[in-house]
Image (cartoon, rainbow, N blue to C red):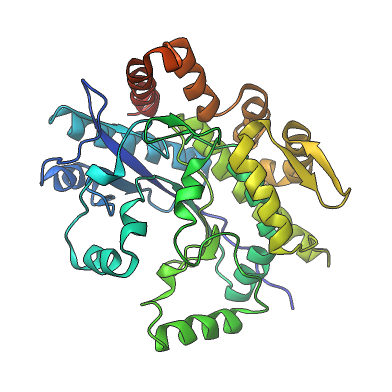
Length: 378
């Protein structure tokens, strides 16, 4: 049965660390009214995260990537101004280079009290920030169908956004250590393939009726049907200090979904692979980021990520033109060539003395992240 073409609207959520502008330390005890101050300027598009040293922003529903850019510029700028009033700054990186999770307190609201009780030490370690991208897919069955197929591309999107090479003051050797921390929670990783929207709803009902979770928002897969909006929500990406990196990943995800829908209208589909295989590529993306070789399952061989980017851009060229994001998608080649924030952070650390003076080098990394986060913000 034919399905009307989705709107393919965009919404972007980003989480930020709050840091002291002078020292780069995490703001473990930020002013109580900071989020309210942000909200007054930004129309309620800013909220607390679990830990007090973090905030989350969310764009409005955007018709295209240009509108998403304007929204992110406005939101990053508004948060930065409110933070500056208190000697603080936002940092859009998925880990703080030397922050210590053991010194952080959480927001004492009912929702977070429940999370702290249920998850114990696991959730207290979540000193991590991510980026979530919502794409409007109104038809519920189509949403599930595209989720099943789009699992394949999740590691590729992670490769474009890695920004968490440091943890607790150490270079971990991974480009996305964030996922290592996040995967300690239940119901994470690639989405479970499901046959239909009704099957997905039955699964959620089983879990809620048995008391395992409150609702579908506690399904923390890398890609999921949103529990609040008629969207597919991509959650695998690290948050990007460089706003243009974030927009490239969002645009490419949008184009991949449109490409898969277009195949469907021609009675074709992307081959679905097991989560075991997808997890192998996910690990390679965590470990090596834009320098990865990922497995091309069709060829049965490891292929440099830059070559895979070329192939994906060929696949979605028509979609990028139709959605008005050709320049943003094309920028993926530059990221594959020059690297992500993870590479820039490690380079800044080494240029600032590295292990010879680790404290000074880590603070230099944070200063660079503060500047990059607000570059181009309105």
